Image 1 (tube, helix red, strand yellow):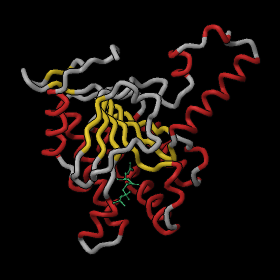
Image 2 (cartoon, protein in one colour):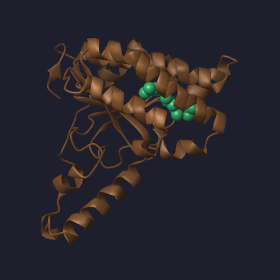
Image 3 (cartoon, helix red, strand yellow):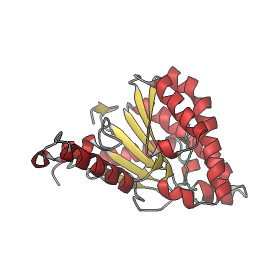
Image 4 (cartoon, protein in one colour):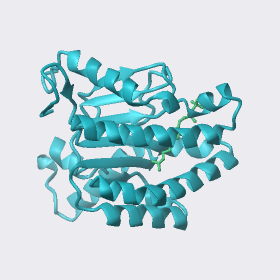
Amino acid sequence: MDNVVSSKLISPNHIAIIMDGNGRWAEKQGKERIDGHYEGVVSVRSAIESCLDYGVKYLTIYAFSTENWGRPSDEVAGLMELFCKTISMEIPSLIDKKVCVKFIGDTMSLSDDVKESVKFCEDSTEGFETLTLCVALNYGARDEIINGVKQLFIKVANGEVDIENIDTKVIESELYTSAIPDPDLMIRTSGEQRISNFLLWQLAYSEFYFTDILWPDFRKEQFKEAIEEFSKRNRRYGKV
Ligand code: FPP
């Protein structure tokens, strides 16, 4: 949390966002749900620009949860197509802005075309340091913890890790986010006030910001309001 953009505004180092309300936005406009997701991409672009404006170093977005497979198959197929299209379309702009993209979640279980897009995007933006955009894709926090525990069991069995030495850092090193600091601020749009299996371990000390604004309407002004609210909080990080 080292970015002070003015005497009053304190920028979080890492913002995590649950981008909720795309479907309701579309319904309100008399459109298909997938149109809401496409409009949501415009808000993602806006959030990236805001992060660059405020000097935020990490942005994690919840693009597709392990629970989202339960949605109608045409919506799931539409989302996968949207991910592929958006990733390839945005790469030049991300390179231009020196944004490094990382994906967290069980991306290996996705279709070949999505896997190829993910790898191409990570490879093309590797090493950039202006902003790290972390996309949670086929992500579930409980699965992340279960996988981490399994890896640790293997290491203990192989004698690589001593059970007495297992602490916070050892657990963190087994999570998808091992190279990423914990979020300072978690934003959820659309009026829902739940974590929904998102970054359960990493959000232990984060500030939460809930807003009724639907994700496609969450643009620069709304982002600024979230940063202003964060700045006002009397943070006691690490003390509670
Ligand atoms: C939740 O709204 C939103 C999603 C499940 C998808 C979010 C994905 C994007 C905005 C695209 C991001 C793209 C890339 C490449 C990172 P909802 O459908 O649950 O809305 P509702 O609660 O109103 O139904």
